Amino acid sequence: MNQLSLWNITSSYILKNDTLFVIDDNLLALVYEGRVIKSLYPNLESAYSNSCVFNKYGYWFIQGRELYHSKTFEGLLNPQRVSPERTFIAIYGRGNDIIVGTNDNDIVLIKNKELSVIESNNNTMVTIYTNYFINRENNYWIGTELNGLYYINKRFLYTLDQSYGINTLNTYPQLKASNGSTWIGQNIGLQRLKNGKIISYKPDDNNSLTTWGLAEDKEKNIWIASNGNGIKIKSINKYFALAEKEGL
Image 1: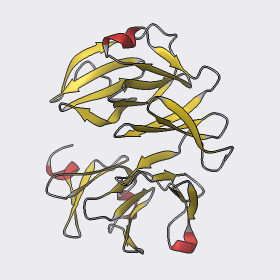
Image 2: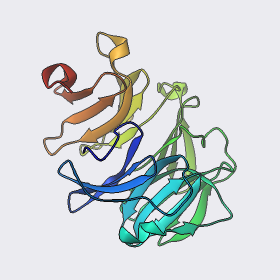
Image 3: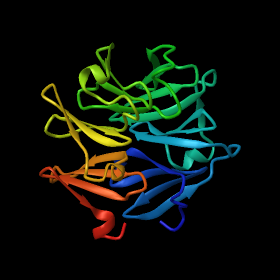
Image 4: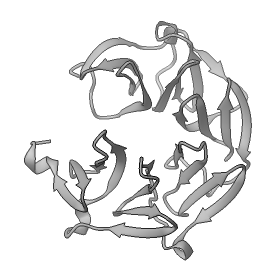
């Protein structure tokens, strides 16, 4: 991926034919098997870009707190601005649903290209660091840096904090695993919510697990991207530091 800086890079959570939609500063790219196969700079003023999503309606990305969309990758050269009356902070998509945090502290659902407000004017839930997640049942999880984890089920809002045994600091990202358990990444640490119980995982060196990314492979192993400490894998309750084994 020598066309990408790998410094300020974000990717979609959804693949199209094993191709990943990536945003690297102001460069938009498609990556397949580690290679950049298409890339372009949109005809927009350079500005901070921090998140992007792909679904059946096309490509979505935030640049300079403005949300843009195009049905095709080539159309991203001159993308269409979505809801010009709003500014946006971060975007997350699963399937064809997208949730977005707005600069006026709303959480917005984009479904069938229509916008509706899920949560209005909540400045504890919506910040530049807020992490969003949609599980298989289309429930929404919102992780925050100071105020714990929020869960929205059928528009009912639940606050999951220390009263539930969940750490309140840096509760992101989240992952709903195939066995039904929910993984909650933290800085520092990792927790799992299963059958109504909280399980905390901490390695011997507490500073080695600052969780910034979670994924599950087809063997049902949990992969953990750890800020400053490489990639780790959790399998049968053991941690393996790939940074040491594979030179990552």
